[in-house]
Image (cartoon, rainbow, N blue to C red; front, side, top):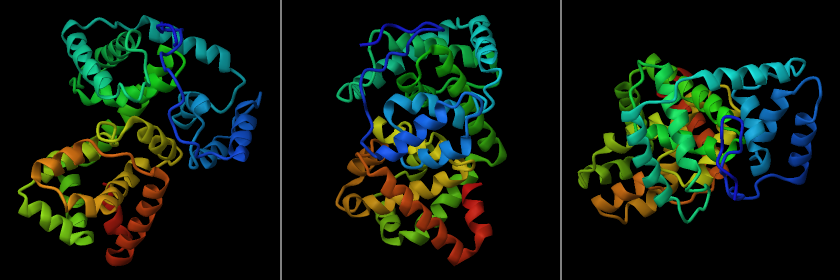
Length: 314
């Protein structure tokens, strides 16, 4: 078990969590790219990450894919030191937010206890420090329990609290910019339009059961399924997402692929059971889901043209 993390200490991840998606060749390619002393080939990292990243390398790979670490390593040490010093100076005190974070982290740890991903003694302090630091630096952002779910994969994968913060900050900024560009209500409406077209029987069944479609669809589209998928599935999905420059645009098609994959199971359930499954998805073959998502995007483009497919992701 890892010791509690400080701004320069280890993050309290506990064991390997993702399935063996990577081949020996992919592992060798990743090692070769990351061991480069002068320049990290991010394009090559992206290609490898699409097949899944080994748990012990995921943190390093994600930092480059998210742009936290620069591909030019000539000033790597000084840049890293400056980033750690900047994080150390951020005010991490926020009494109201801290209490709410602790409550949500407790629920998260309870829900994921069988996955055994985090040290329940060390992890809460990291969540609290990182989320409070982000909100103190971004006064326009309101606290949401979803921030804990979005932060969790970074607490699991990163070696230092500063790296957790840097990657969390980058992803939340990306998601915020995406939502500012297009209203969430418009995103949900467009998503439901394609849901109705692609899966009319399932859509009608949801209507018959009087399911509040907006409740789960909004969360799915906002938070990259961080709240709904089992954490090991989230890690593999984000491997693939971070390898794509337009992952926020691709995400709705993944959501449609999940509905298609679960269609038969969902049609056997009643309203409360459907809601429970949609808010707590079962373990899925993420590589297969992503492949289906590419097919769905092509299907939508064939039916409605590329402009319509882009509108879904906008």
